[in-house]
Image (spheres, rainbow, N blue to C red):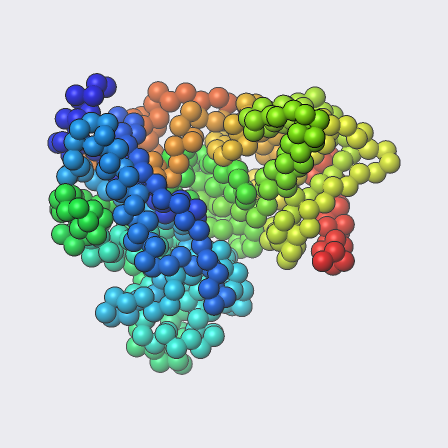
Length: 533
């Protein structure tokens, strides 16, 4: 598309804007009607530990929002000679879960409590037992009930409870609404009604009835909306807040705000039943779109939804690539000591590719990349370990394969619950994250672990802000009765190239041997936690 065409598209407001609040970066992405990125902007930030809670300052939330938008707007001006005044649609997303509570005057009662806080263990256990539905510690309802258990003085003053994405949306539209994917990290969702589970809402109200609060749960939670539904318009105050230079016009439609898990599904075309995606980084999580809800409660499986309301089984492991990265740092030091300078791409590419030469089961070696505890394997703390026996085949290829396999060890245990216990069918999985920058290696390891074909798309690096822009575009550009899966599959991703690698039977068998060793060795990891401080 020519510069002149893009300038006209921007001037006529035929664009969509997605802004996502990630854990380390706020990013704004403006796309054209062909879903290509026109301009982007970002703002780096970090959470802080204050008074025992991980949080982001409320003023920095606004500062970061404005900075990311301003940088994107400046890029539009520089690249196309246009002052951005109108956008076709806007959507906001943010880290799922967490707790933001407000009073009737709209004042934040306590600092934002993020998903990272592990302070709600008692609450999560009580609610899980009460609902017979897994309530993770990071969910909004767990934070709310823990505040009640703690007797925190702000609780009686609550008028509205939401997530970070819901808060931004409320600020800019005045609408106390939330996308169903984000809502599924607030409170359990009833698949039939696409709303908070009514029986569980009543159970919660009964649980706290003796405390005589002047509110009920349904009254303080945001309204649940599906992708494509109208979620309000940009108010004059909201437009000025987003763009203090006062160029942006009010009245722009907004789609329902979503969580980062939902935008990840959209950005990887993983919203159709029997599909899923695996995000690989410091932690690793798989999200599988289910054909039906699970038969019973599993503490290892989070039940959330796609942005259009389909049930999703989420397996989240706290540890993935951090220990592997630490070993890479050690190898870099060795190379430097030998007088060689290797850039990161060559270092990772060379060492990871050695894993392709390894024994199928990694030669009897074992590692645990546990820098922190791991819920799936029952470890409250972590100690990174590398272990071998006198009979192990200790060479570089097996060493690298071991760390790759270990990165997916806890994930494999959680996924087996879905595939073996619940017989969940998976047609395809899409991998995304830094580990897949080295061709083939990460895909082969993950395919061996999960025994499912693994694809990597050329768009996988676009990120959640782009996924949110797609949801904003869907809200205004969908055909009548066109569902989200068809919109993504037939329009957005129709011509997107992808590389699929099927599981190699020898690798699958090798990983099977490795994972049995991994399970048996968990006692070693526990001993390290008990005796190494």
